[in-house]
Length: 333
Image 1: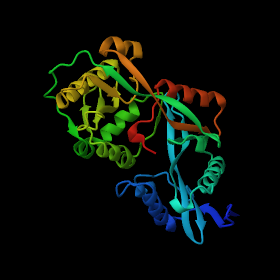
Image 2 (image 1 turned 135 degrees about the horizontal axis):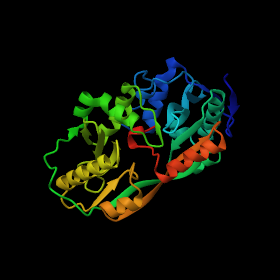
Image 3 (image 1 turned 180 degrees about the horizontal axis):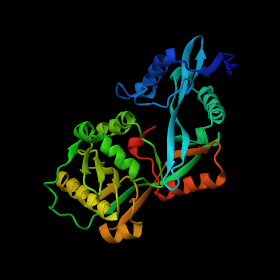
């Protein structure tokens, strides 16, 4: 199907999906609009990093044979911890229009097409990240205020643990990637993205960890867990970007190790920042155990129901609003 319309300047515009042999045109457009490092956009079409991709997941607007606007529906699965149900999620990505073709409604038309595509292909829910919510709210996406980041006036720094080994991102991904994925999968929050297979974990989570100059600490024993510190060299932006723990004692151990490592690297720091709330401790317990807690709100995430019941949708929203579920930086979509 190749619907053709005319914009307000009477320019003929063809809206259709981007075929496999046209993927490079979409990649070139995205690089032109979004200034990111090489290799970033190729991952959306690579079968190892995006194993659920299907032809038709990228939609484009064409004028005189040129791709001038495109969006991508990245297929991800949100898994429920309670019953292990997986919900097909359409993560709207790479919304981009060439500068000389903006303000003609091309991307909005593509977003409307994406809703139809998701409805026809049995998607359950859609998510996106944006700093321009009005562009999406008119089409049914809804902002959710995520508790992120969390700042703690850490009350018990210590020098103990300075000799604990922290892995560079490259080292831990090359030696323990499957174990990290297993811990993430087996110690879940209420809802979380399925990061399998390991090639997808490496291509997205690992990519983000490398980009943010991260290090990780890994517990190999029966009480498994890991914790990641990102932006190591930026005293104003260093933070604990992700963790997984088998129980509350392991979570506290990992928090202490990370706080002390941050303080060792940045001695002037008194506030420890976490991406979100703990996996096991309540905020009241965290405040008593670690120090005064301050919660910020992140309003850049939006969700849209596709075919979930209202009951399930509200459960998912409540989990993300409370921080019992979260979108980690490593889940970039």
